[in-house]
Length: 507
Image (cartoon, rainbow, N blue to C red):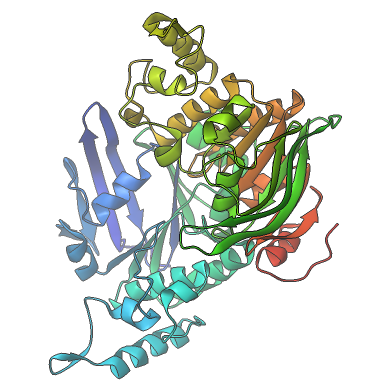
């Protein structure tokens, strides 16, 4: 690894938005042939810094240098031309097009005025073979796995001759096996002369793949350290500014009656296809049951059915002895079902409303917030002030619009509202998606508290580490059906095999 001139250097990068300094004189450098990880809490400034490097934002102060020469990167097109590729967390692919068509899009080889399909496929095949990617150039993107789609994104960058690759939360949608394969790919890329910036909130992954690690906190660079000698605890302390509990402390509880029972449930998705196929399980008082699976295996439709947002085509849903199969979302709420939705923007919050208004969305027409049909704004604000303090929501008060908060603090508002209603059943869908280690610790503690108070908690998560640390029982969902039931002592490998349709002895 070269120790002379970095292939990339950011000097004194500062970016201000109204009311916030997102990047405060940040320095960052990338050496030739290394993986440099970028860590930080939500709102620490990681994405802003990379968006500046990729030409999506213009810095207010600071400079970018490539191979020692100052570079003016004012657009993604300029970034690509300078050899910088970026794989976003949400892939930028066209599902109905083939792998080869997606990779060469906007940079197609032509024969006269027409696309030279053979040349495109040959180039893609040559790149795939060189970097040991197993992928069919003829396959439609909609027909390949999420892990393969990510490889298509990486190949897009390689096709455009990128020698610097930015990966934003690259394992968020991958199974453990796909994550292992990605790390092997990254090692091949680095061996082939690439330099990689790896953005992640998963400390164990950073320690596995990175050569150096830079930590940002509240817009400022805390430090850049070598991987050698770093630990999960030391990185978490740098990120949050205090010691963080990395393991979930759970005491044994006595399980009570079944509070949520699902029998032979079938649910149709928006395309008219059956997304949930004969699912049955129950969740008892005082336990956390987790549903693990790769994204897109019926989890969303199952949650919608269990919260009244979508009616099942067949089967039964029983909450605390009362059948709610055809009930509305309002009726589920009234019967004591709390719902932390997987998409906090679409289903959890009204972003234009104040925090106080969001916290009473379910109960604004009831006492103590209303009397004889008239809202009491003072009580709404007083309640909000108490909840915002109890749930450590930072970045605003009762009158602050929800849109002004970071993702982690928005999630705390949703959790505060749902938990404060004292539900009998709490459905938590991807409750820590995109959150930093400090916010994850807080959410996990709250879910365990609900369990210990005798509530039934259904956790739906893509994070196997989260599932294994929180769950009393684990159900794996694959193509809309339960593929197996496991105890909390199951291995990630066992769960990963079941998540991809492989046979494993359930226990």
